Image 1 (cartoon, helix red, strand yellow):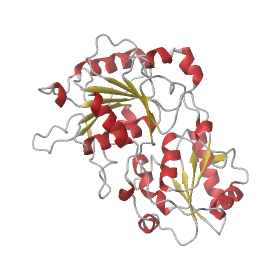
Image 2 (cartoon, one colour):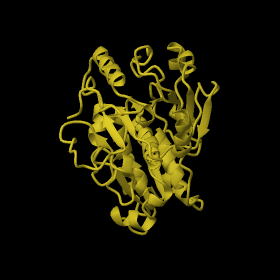
Image 3 (cartoon, helix red, strand yellow):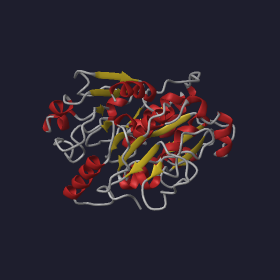
Image 4 (cartoon, one colour):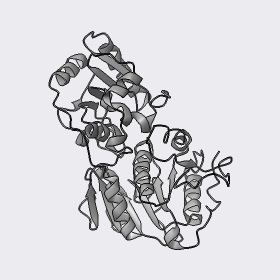
Length: 355
């Protein structure tokens, strides 16, 4: 159960003490994962964050972070049972507008939440006017710097809703590891991709392989995310790989596997020799950060162009000859790099100078 968006979050005594408010509405887990990456980096720098996301994502998230040794602070989900005055202060809080299929009601709830939640900066992921246009009219919203997080977007969507004009009104635009059709606007800052975990927090190869009960053979992680038919296709790929005795395949369902939910998948990737999945933001940049080769489908999406995110060698067009493709990638493995730069920290430093 979560807070009523019309109820104000407890106000702070001074504007500089107000939290950052991160708008992460949208389908899939990419929006929330980027928001959490930013919030985790922000809380390490002493900034409090409020995240507004879809109900299903918020419901699954509080149990995900903080469970791994050395991991980021567990975010706090708003609602009954979470208001113990003796509990230690939390730097990250999650909120949702609740379940509704009425777009006008959803817009009303979002705007009510934004009006009543004091914040020192508003960070908006992907959609400059909001997923339903609820941010297009902002005269009645609290005055605070606005930052747009701009990953790639479908140019037709940008044109149809004149998003260039909307995005131009933002104080700053952050490009988290990739450029999109609005990247040429003023006040943009390109950073490396944002991820939830620092290099030293990831499980070692040995630990990950022990957790997943892997033997000495090359191991393939098949990430079963996406729509129902896409997951079926990925499971079919896993079944074909499982019949190949020279490799071992592990099918990971982020929504069903308690041992490895969405925000924890990256922790385990060093234990695998190849990742098979789809070309979403999380899968692509987490695999690359861990130095694990990737084979991924470029899925058609309303707002995202996954084909542009993937390199030619990473792109998987069908499950035809999937075993041969995997064996070929495994035979051409290069030495892995041992670290990466998490662009969320540069983003936090930039936002702090605005707020």
